[in-house]
Amino acid sequence: MSSFDIVSPIDGSVFERVSYQSNEDVDSAVRAARKAQGKWANVPLAERAQICTRFVAEMLAMADDAGLELAHQMGRPLAFGGKEMNGVAERTHFMISRADAGLSSLDVSDSQAGRRVDREPLGLALVVAPWNYPFLTAINTIVPALLAGNSVILKPAGQTALTGRRFADAFRRAGLPEGVFQTIFATHDTIGKIILNGGIDFVAFTGSVRGGTEIEKVAAGRFIPITLELGGKDPAYVRSDANLERTVASLVDGSFFNSGQSCCGIERIYVAKKIFDPFVSAFITETGRTQKLGSPLDTGTTLGPVVTKRAAGEIGDQIAAAVDAGAEVVTGKIPSAEDGCYLDATTLVSVDHSQAFMTEETFGPAVGIMPVEDDEEAVRLMNDSRFGLSASLWTADRVAAEQLGRAVKTGTLFVNRCDYLDPRLAWTGIKESGRGCSLSEWGFHHVTRPKSYYFG
Image (cartoon, rainbow, N blue to C red; front, side, top):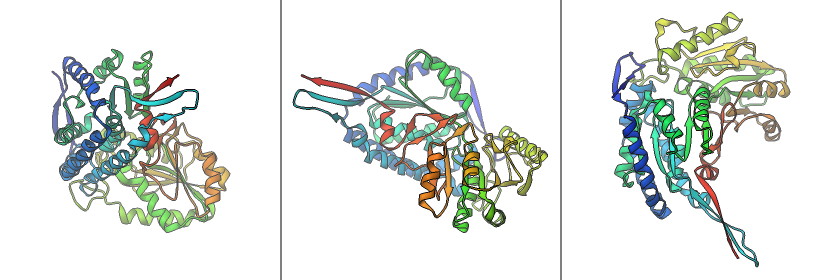
């Protein structure tokens, strides 16, 4: 049986060695999940909700230990690591509160006949989670799927594999019946085989565009639903009437939190020419004040290392190419090999869309700021991307925000907020940011199928 190493970005050491499960073990997990699902679907929704509520309590109880593990696995500072569990609690409690509405039947009877449309579970859901927010991204599908009566298999990212054990332990302690939720440590080939062989009824994948493309190829001809949350190059537009202090503080945080390793993090900022210089000046000051690069094990660190040396190299190459093309570094620096995984919070000006830095995903602590003449130019540049996950507008004019928002091609539009996933809203992307959605009442529709009844 082969294994893989979790190499810590803190110092390049092996944090833990994890064994892959054999194809036979994975097949056994699939069979157990399918067997357990029928009974689980017949458990009353109120009981399923109680188990999910207990699950939250178990996850919150392990927040500090899980935060320490995240620091070692992917570099998030201790000051923030355990707080991911707060998001797990927020999203889980909200989905529980909306389960009745999201799963309710639609009665369209009249005097001639009884008619009803029910929501039925799909069966076995496979959740393929990423490393950057391994708990939050997974919970978006796991909890709605379980509430709807599905069984779930979680395949965590190798870099944050230990999160899979945390999920399994919490559900076991919460009293979830055996087999309904399982974590597997498997190769991409093994995952492809179980999708291809018909054991899986639904796939929720969060990761790269390349990974999403491979999932679709493998599932071709299976006719199973797939939701994909892929890349992002999320823009912000700051109008001249924006509250400068609040806007700068929010966009610095939105650009550099989690070392910029967030699908909906801010990667490009367009600022009304009239306020461009004061905005950049304030952005530089705020970055210096708030972004403290260092070991994630240091409680004073706010900016930890990026996940791997490979990622650091790719981010550095993109920054260097932009500088070679005329961009100017105003915070941070061009990363070098000597920096390892520790990259400064880097801000570039004199950027444009001829540079990959402003059009291709960076996924690191780096952002470009560009002046624009008017709303029309801002919208054109915001839409000049193959991605469309989220975008933000910063303005005091609600009417203008409504008008501009309709023109921006994105899954979620924020006004005077950014880098946030609201469980009350459908989380979805367009273009190469993916398809399908999770959370809100709409999220239940993606883990169920409609079944119609006619009573003559």
